[in-house]
Length: 270
Image (cartoon, rainbow, N blue to C red; front, side):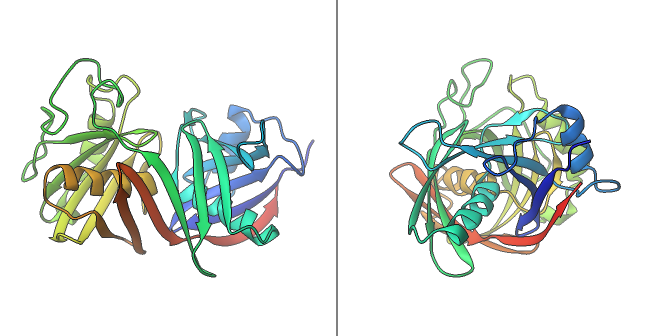
């Protein structure tokens, strides 16, 4: 039986098992993903990420992102930051280009702790998200008691964002899976609930598509700030407070730049 070496990392508690395919190739199967993701008998993670050799000269590495159920995710902001940390630790490059199924993301080393990633263009056009039919994406006909109607956006993956108060009182484990699988989202969706502190600071909780409740979500934080900007509730530079710390989001020319920490928890093999 093959030994699989991995690195366990996290960005503000949003955790990943990372397999560096450049060093030791592993054939990724649903069984391996399930085994490694399991928090009882494996390493435990929100998502498994593989680092692969570049396929062309316009990027440094190619990553693939898998949810615990074996399905793929197009993008992951916190996961990209974790991969970037590993790459920055092995080179002196000030900037990296990391390709995912959502496109090429540019990462920059801010300091010893923090890394910024440009997650690229954001859209609220109904076909980009995608939705099953043309709807006003700023006022989706999906509701949570005490919150605004949802705002649907795409940042390499689909999101719906709700603004309201007392987000800790919301039973996200109940409403999250229902909204994730709503008929309007053919590819399902991530769900963010937001409490606005001021126009430059928010609190966020997230139900991640294919994963469940997570402690943080980088693409979700970007989607939340973009949605708030579209609704004229937020400025373009916003601190997003999560359970274990903050991400800092800057929206420029419809692109989202996210800055935050990435940490290695441990290295292991199974």
